[in-house]
Length: 304
Image (cartoon, rainbow, N blue to C red; front, side, top):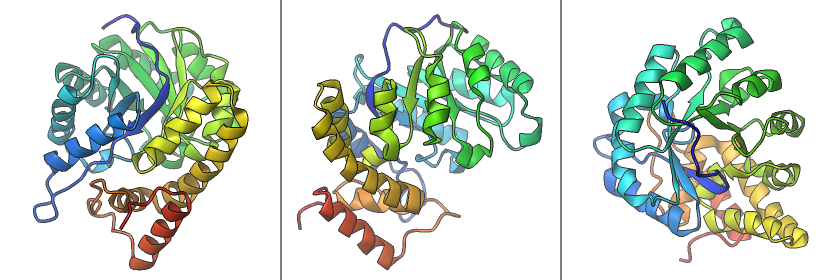
């Protein structure tokens, strides 16, 4: 186990999509590297691999390891390389954390076990996260995403876990600002709270979130970073105008169409999205046109 990192999470981090070969269905390394380079060039302060947007639930462990190996040479020492490692058992989560560390990840993001949701009391979750943090060679971030886990991490639990020397922060993707405010009460120089919701990115920053791990940044990276830079620079009016565009893209594409929509939007801006892995289905033609219209309105579509 390490002690807390000296690097501070801030800015926009991109939860990288996982592209697949259209013929074999295997993860496509060249497309993946192209996307990682593009996100960092657009101003991302780091990347997250094997997150929800990266179709983590549809990847085998060997593929998760490959993603870290492929990304590590592309991410500088000043940037973050995060890996999603959450599993249904504490043992499996620890094994994934150790494997990600061995391949060069800087920190791991751990979604709560949720198959046995009714058994995931604060006591059970505290024991799980503490065991993972004790065993992980690299820092741990908590991950709150009620959309998929069907429960939320309680602010009391987060406050307790924030004192652990190897738990350095959390990602809250709920989009629930009162809930986020509860988490922010635990934020300190040693525990960072990031939002995972692009639709509420600006108000989250104004409440005190240090940044965001935003799916919308995969196809609107420069716009996402511009919102962050504007609010940090004290230009609230510019930040609000930019965020209005960002929120539409996040709510309608990320929230409305999910991973298939995100990948289609990446295709539309010249990146490598492609089809999702089954059982997810690609967007339909009408949805693809809707995505293009939204991107054109925001000035984010690739020129023909």
